[in-house]
Length: 479
Length: 82
Ligand code: SF4
Ligand code: SF4
Image 1 (cartoon, each protein chain N blue to C red):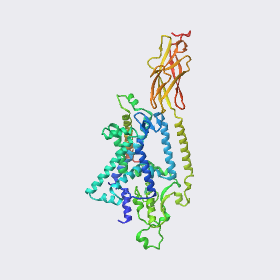
Image 2: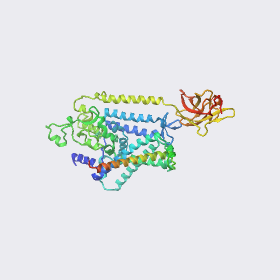
Image 3: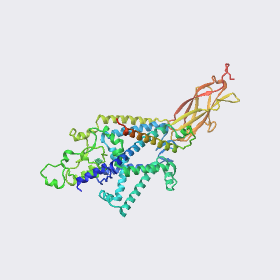
């Protein structure tokens, strides 16, 4: 097969699905990508194992409805923070895309990162691109069967590990692994482990670049975020063309020739199976494999590097000579300002986040109780959510009802302050009492002041409710 | 695989995947606001579920609805003459 036929075969293979066999390549950007894979996947698999005090450092404890992230604990009430975070992530994606194009795709998208790992495993078992193609078209021999089985075992185990780790972000991973090891995993945890494993296997082992080409909204959306100064992977048309190859290149020594030796390697290494020399295409995930391979080729034919390189449309069309224009553009500055504002908002919301939340409920069964000493009593259910990290003690006081006193009556009577463990909700009871002759209406507004007594900056919360008593008599006494 | 069959698979994959993402967002918003345990107590029929069941069923239900929704839209668009 000539190289051009080879390219054509690969292109049609890419379009009509036979599998793409990306050729292995070494170089600056591929090393960078490998580092990203190690860092990101390392963080993913190790993070659930980190402990913070008594608990898992990062645990999105869905059954308990609280999220732990190191020293922070988030409650459903803090949901707006999560929304802010997501909006920030979105703007950040716009920001980085405007500057550097699809760096996300090339270096950080879970899709690419896991695909990369799966490709490594595949290469490790089946060998280089040429060997893989040969194996794929060879009849089923024992050797082929053996290689395929090893590959599948590796893939499936890795996918299962991924699924288990994923669920380990939502349930304590140590227990989860123990259950899995003793085959006691059941119910929804088992379901989600298998589900996520299957998704990993399908996306990274089977679908791969097709997720990017057909299923990813971001890939289609990028043109809205790109402009003439966005970094893209581009082939230097002026320098490369007219391309020529091998014998022809020698025979027509006199004719003008570009630097492209038409070796076709840039197409062979491309994980999405496109030819970058045809210009920017939406399939390109900016993995820079073609840059690395072309640089290697240029080195071997003793030509300067960068026939394929990171560039911008403006530079390519000669409007810009070099890249500093990348940063100081209205679009980038706008995104930057929005991003900064959001980060500031998020930071201050986080810092000013209340450390407690209080709910006051009246006892619905009895409006009031009258003691033999002529004291009217109301009981209130006080739910305190301790959102801090320390065991907090709460003091209760009353306003707006002169002559009344309040004290905790549950969990213990006559304590000065009631304790609630960190991250817990305390269901407490408080009793308000007042001599009957001090009341001047059947129901009146009262206001509780609930105060933290410990910690660096104890805060207080006021909550209103109503106090009920007997109807007061005209002479000031009660019936 | 010939091209027609392949196109169908692409459609199925897109529908499943995009519905999955949207169901994730919907379930997050929904369950950040409502606790499935409380919801179960309010049900018009006897329902006793724990939180994991609530979240899981909720998510899967959102997903199913979105898939059905997408498929019906696709089908209508395909079958209509503008
Ligand atoms: S195209 Fe989509 S799925 Fe593919 S790498 Fe980019 S963001 Fe990820
Ligand atoms: S054209 Fe180059 S940068 Fe783009 S996906 Fe293919 S190999 Fe990667």
